Length: 244
Image (cartoon, rainbow, N blue to C red; front, side, top):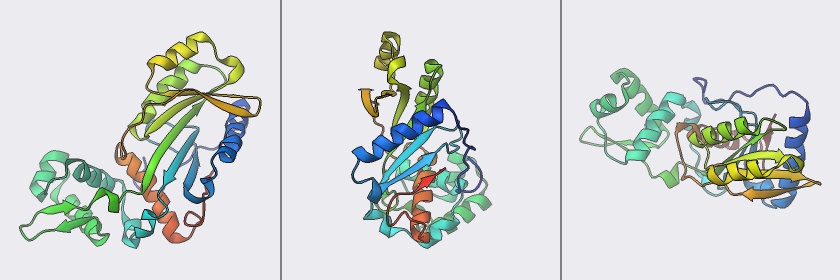
């Protein structure tokens, strides 16, 4: 990802795959009545490992109201440190964080100061730092990544499996008429799921594995992007918005 938490997006190119994505998304919205309240849909965001065609983020519309405005000052390095602290759930000293993460004391002090201002980290009396509860900081329920292909389904599965580095679920989306037994067999052995779109509807051929959130600091980037836009009044607080 870029150094800022603000996300980059690939310029969309019109063609058969974009039509497949748009058709699927239209049906997906109809089938999910709560999409206007707690979903954010990203089209081709850069995730560090590529540009998935769709990333559907479901968030908690109650928890997101806890957003602290100081969180808008966080950058990717801060989220990497936060994720590390959240994963290990210990009290940390500057020295222990430096040993575990390799950042300089100066960078760690700057990051912890920002996270303290955002009520994500507490500086304790014994000069240690403790992270807050995940429930008070992470508002995302699920991150679903979707890779759409007209052809070259093998590459679609490779990318879909890579997307588990930030997503809780990952799928390959193919036209229904292109699905053969060899594709179904691949889906059966893959952690990624398989979706087919045909006749103005989609079917879940095989379900994706589900990973616990957050998977990595990249999961936090989606969390922060949604939270920041909710606080700024850019539509998230009142309903879903789409990034194209």
